[in-house]
Length: 352
Image (cartoon, rainbow, N blue to C red; front, side, top):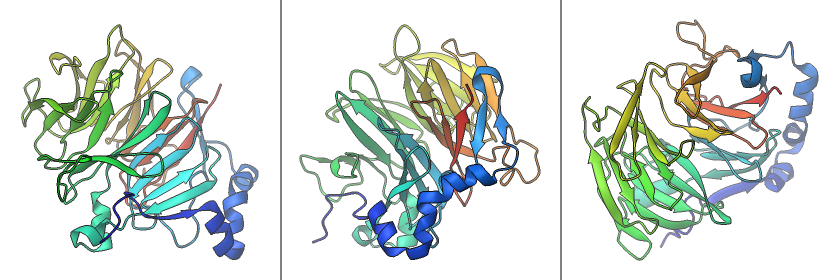
C-alpha cells in the first residue's frame, strides 16, 4: 500500500542539488550575487514608503526544472519562501530570502487517484501558512479531482484532511467540496475555506475541524459570490473580520467571524485573488494585472505594477500580468507569483 504520510513524498534538498547537478549546481549558490553585478538600472514599483525594487534573478530553478501556472507563495518565520505551481518538477520549491534554492517537492498524488502525473499537477492551488502557538502549519487546497483541504507540518506531513478522502478516520473527514481555492485561520483557531471554483460557498470549522457554518452560493447579492477565490482574517481593526475576494464580481466582501455580512468594498480592486497582512496593511494580488495595498480603514495606499493594457506585460519587469498570490517577509520584501504558464515568482525588495 502506498504511504500517504506526506502530501509530497518525493523531495530534493540543497545537498541533493549540489551532489548531482555538477557544474550547473554552481548557479544555485552564485546566481543572486552575479545578478547584482550584471543587473541594469533597477526596476522600481511604487513610491515613498511603498517603493519596491525588483530582484531580477530571485527564484531561479536549476536546468531541467520549471514552473507551471503560478499558484501560491507563503513565508515562514525563518523567511523561507514556499512557492507552488502547477508543475510536476517541482510542485513546491523552497527558497531562502536571497533566492538560494533549499528544497523541492514533487507530488505522486497521481498514483493514488489513477491520473497521469501531468493531470495530477493540475490539482495544485492554494496554500496558507498558519502560526498556531509556537508551531507553524500549512493548509493546502486542492482543485478537482483532489477537492481536499489538507493540513500539514512544514515538511508536508499530513496531519488532517477534509473533502474527497478515500476513507474517514481520526485524521480524515469526508465532506463535499466542489473545487476549493483558499483557507484562512482566525486568532481563536477557527478555520475558514472558500469553495471558489465550485459551489461558491464559505465553510467555517472549529480548530478541530468540526463544521460550524456554511454560507454563500452563486450570485451578486451580498453573501453570494462569483468565484470567491480568496479568504483572510484581518486583524487590522478593533475586531477580527473575514475578508473574501469575490473575484468575478470585482469586489471584496467583509464579514464577522460568525460569517454575518458587514460591508462591501468596490472600486479599489478589479479581480482580487487573495490577501496578505503585513505592518498594518492588507496586500491584495489582483488577477487584472496589479497589486493593491489597503490601510486599516480599507483605503487604497498604493497600487503597484499595473499592466492593464500593456503589450507584453508578461515579460515586462515593471508590470504584472496576472498576480495570483503574494506574501511579505519580515523585512517588508514583497513576493508575487502569477497565473501565467511559467509562474513568474518575483521578489521586490522594500526600499526604505
